[in-house]
Every structure is written in structure tokens, then in C-alpha cells.
Length: 269
Image (tube, rainbow, N blue to C red; front, side):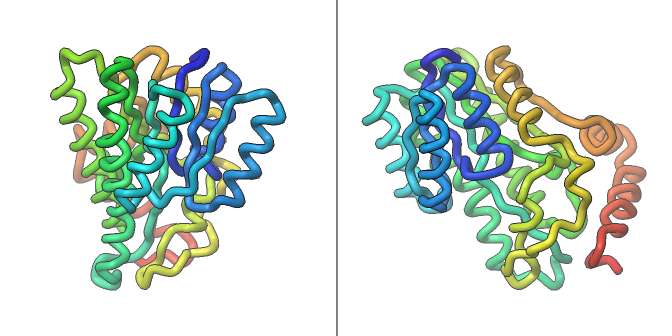
């Protein structure tokens, strides 16, 4: 990763922030974006104090012009792009019958269109460097999770987009990686939208029992280095869930319903 130029979206917290620290420690030059300028500037100060090369750009990835600006600022500062990590994302929680359509539109705008916009404008530079496009997805991109229609739809869409991009670039040298972290310790559940589009506020799961974001970041960095296609993390709620859904779909449906129905304030209760 020495001197590689890495764009990380959603870099102000969770997996994005962990990736920033991991890639910086490996010698990469970072272009970080998120919606909060204050958080980004604090992260920049922390990393530059340690001698790392970092720029930050306040960006709403659901806005195409913002994504274009992010790429332009990166190239202006570093002259190239080697890795794009599409990490920015939001979740939602609520039964489809009770959920406002604008909630699904907002989730799709960030999770799917954000990845599309950033990849579109970064692609010419990534093709030139024979670099990597990474999508931070979810188990929800392999199987529909009840109570999370918009989230699952956005991750399925991301998978289809990235898999097609990979095939289209079979002979160009572009590397495409899809990462499904499973349940990871982060603030994504706290900021998840409810049926009306308000932030959920409290996570329905025990965050302390989840994989730390720092470990996820190491897997992502190693996966890019080895140019892997897909990474599924955690066993029970990751690899095993995907296996069950592929070979025993009815059982997987039953178990996922049962698991999520046990969450505090579950919409199924």
C-alpha cells in the first residue's frame, strides 16, 4: 500500500474510519470523505500529526456533483487514484407496509447511487493504475433481511453493479472486491432510519459481541492486496448464513425471521 492513493467514503466513523487508520499505517495516501466537515477535520488532524498524508472533503455521496468533486480534489492533490472504497452507507428498520417510500429512496441514494457516482468518476484513473474498486456491502446483499427491505435492496443492487463491472473489465486489469462484513461493531444501527425516516437512535443489538471495525479493516486491506473477489466475514451470521440461503433457502428464511424478531422493539412483535 506504500504511496497508493486511496479514496474512502463514509470515513468519519465505523469501518470507514478503521480503514483510514489501517491504510495510513500501511503507507497509503488518503482522500477521506463524509458529510461532517468537523469530524473529518479532527480525523485529518489526528492522522497528519502522525505523519500521514491525508486530505478530506465534505461530501454527500447521494449527490452526483459531490462525488465528482471528491474525485477531482483527489486527483488535484495526488495526481492519481489507486483504490476506491465505497463504504458510505445507511441502514433502515421497519416493515415495508409501514415504511415511507422516501426512506427507501434515501437508503438507495447513499448505498447504491453513492457507489455508482464515485466509481463512475474515479474509473478512468483506476483503469490507468489498474487499481481496485471495493464495495462494503452486507449479508443483506446475499439474502433479504426482514424489516430491512430498503437496505437489502440497496446492497443487492450494489452487488449486481460491482459484479457486472468486474466482468466488463475482465481484460483491463481492474480489480473489483465485494466485502460483506456481517454484524460489525459500528454506529450504523444507531443511525438507521425508522419507518418515517428518523434516526433509530439506539442499536437493537449487543455491539460488544460483534467483530471490531479495526479487524474488518485489516481483512479489507489484505483482500485488496491479494485482489480477492469476495470476502464474507464472521461465521454464524456471515458465511453460515450465506451457505444456508444458497442450499437451504426455506430454513434460512425461518432462521433470519426468528433472529430478527428477537431484537428489542422488533417490528414483528
